[in-house]
Amino acid sequence: MPKRERGTGGLFRMKGTKNWYAQYYDANGKPRRVTTGTDVKQEAQTFLRNLMNDADRGVAFIGDVKKLTYGDLRKGLIQSYMEKGNKSLQVTVEGEDTIWGLTPLDEFFGYKSEQEPGSPATRITTDAAREFASKRLAEGVTNSTINTSLALLRRMLNLAKDDGKLQTVPKIHLFKPNPARKGFLSLEKFEELLAKLPADLKPLILLLYYCGLRRGEALQVVWSQVDLAGATIRLEDEQTKSGEARTIPLPDELVQLLRQVEPKEGKVFTVTDSYIRKEWPLACAAVGLDGLLIHDLRRSAVKNLMKAGVQQQVAMAISGHKTVSVFQRYNIIDTADVVEAMRKVQLAHREKSSGRDSESLVRASGGRKRLKG
Image 1: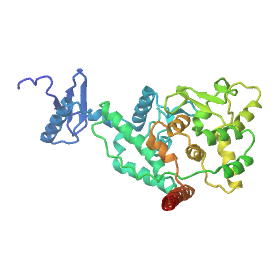
Image 2: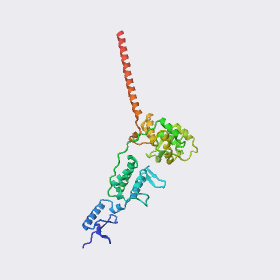
Image 3: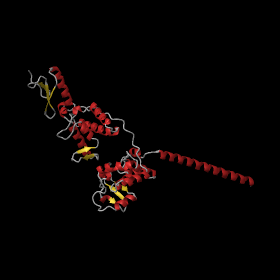
């Protein structure tokens, strides 16, 4: 029997098994071996040919795919965020890297640590993603929040395929996003709310309401970035979501509160997220604002800036919005706006009509003078 040429691959049976195994050497000379799942040699030969054709096209080796876990995909996603310097990358109290929206996926696919990496990647299918979404819906989570997690799942799968670790990627279907929130707080209602908040929380809330900072940006500010004489805070590029430094003007009321703080060392706003989560809903409930979000203060700031006549470009520089489309979603139009618009139209019509009447009187008066002359 002629000797088989190296590179063509081969079939063999392992001791104690009835199914054929396929083996070939990859481009690096590494042997690749996997069961064909059949004891029919002709079927096994077809499996081997397909296996080698996949290798020639750069498709991931099926034996490696079977070993891949959710934890491996998650690790690739975290690594990608680190490489890109993505601001969404966070660190848990246990010191582990995570991303907002990733924890529900970890729980669903059984990830606990690198030692307990969770489900095999082959079980992360379109149906599994739908099951995850249905579970979250039943928990009362919004479509947009679910989409955040699904987008992370889609990205980690695509990264694995780009790295040659997956042969194919299942389709991950997103829900229709929820309508943008319309939360807005008038100055009168804000002052009521502020009166119910603990003294140590008031400076942060004043900053968020007047300037529209993201809470995560504000909580990073240290005293060396504050210029009380100039009434500004300087955010550095590494502190902002956009990655661009910006200067924030401060309202007088906040400047007065900050002047009273001693010593002026370390972080300016020392309240913790857990403290905010505890006190915020209590104050909101006390003034009939149940359900108001901290993030609604950012929407309020944008609307107030625009109503005050601040140029859009300047307002965006204060709030940190990079695109006009996202900024406009925060510039909420309410009933008072449209009523005011009609008032302005009617006023303009009255002025124009008054002008025509005055012009008619002048012409009529001039005509009479000409008759007398």
